[in-house]
Length: 257
Length: 261
Image (cartoon, rainbow over all chains, first blue to last red; front, side):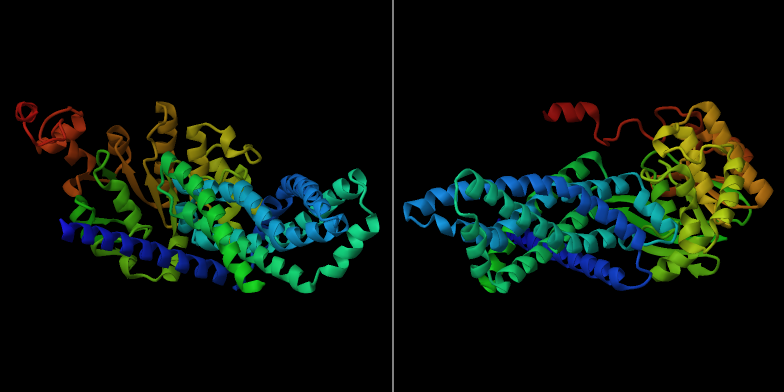
């Protein structure tokens, strides 16, 4: 009985270490193909359009309302201490350091991440990945690698876009609706924000980009080649990447600040 | 062209190949016949190196496929074409780009040459004029023909067909059979067909190999297979539900199983 449960634990441990190892090799191989010529510019452009450009609208809406809500809540709290003038600083700091990278990554994981997993899974079911291999092309090089590299490029850009729109959302509520002085909204913001705040947000965005692409491509690539396999892989990919974004965010915050 | 020696493979307890030894001759059509779960598709994947066997060797043009590096394997596959069961066309590309894909990846040809080459192959499979359609706009039989055009665009020496006629209406199946025969008789392409379609198999094959749960139970020309007295072969060809190949998957007696409760 006891030996049975030990065997069970051991087997579970071994298989999770195996999956971890395999995903590590998978990532290393994808990154190697990304820097080794030939660089597939057409594929990169296609993926950039899908992961980057097509995420802009949803990022815009999310960012606008996040900034607006933040300004509303911040105004309420700050006005209790009579320091409404600090609203610009409060909005900018929380957006750039924290909410920008995290919310942007969560939205991309939900929109593009799920699509990445589903697409790779379906290519597997319909034999498109083996077909690539039969044509002498490594699917990791052709399908996976551009997705990972593009995700690392796109996330910081989308985050920058998110930050700007959210600060603008805060401006709409704070300055236009609640009547805070425009000069203090932007002036204090510029004075208080440091370059460190901005580049640590940037590092977060880079890491989240890598994380989303790695998790979503690997889960899609190793999905069971059945309908249920792909649907559960898609769910797992979104859940796992969202949770790891929040966890990695904590680790990065404690290191960076 | 291909020689398989003592190949063994299993998924857990289910063996898909038990000491399989056979060979596929150059310029001939060899059909591997077998029911579902007989291990024929797995065998095909192992021949082209998409899957690893547990033991044994597969020799292709003097090279052991089971020991080749990934790069050597990819190089070798440039001499192979494969028609997948579901055609495996890329959904996001139109017919032209699908067929052009291997050419664009491996040869630096001008678009004009590519266009001409594709017209030739599409004419062969009788689908000239469909270049700009998407795969989802074609019927099952037509996507198979496009898949075949893509498989032969690099002029391979050998073409593998995974269940080429399954799921097709009799006329489409007839078209595919004619194309397999044409490619072999006119261009001398060596062909390996995996199928459970007995009629088509006996019609096109130079040699038939019957696989039953990972074991080869018969090898020979279509005539030899038709005149075989082996009860397993007879059951397979006539398609009778029960015989040496049992109807019930359980080896327990039904009554005994019921009494156990």
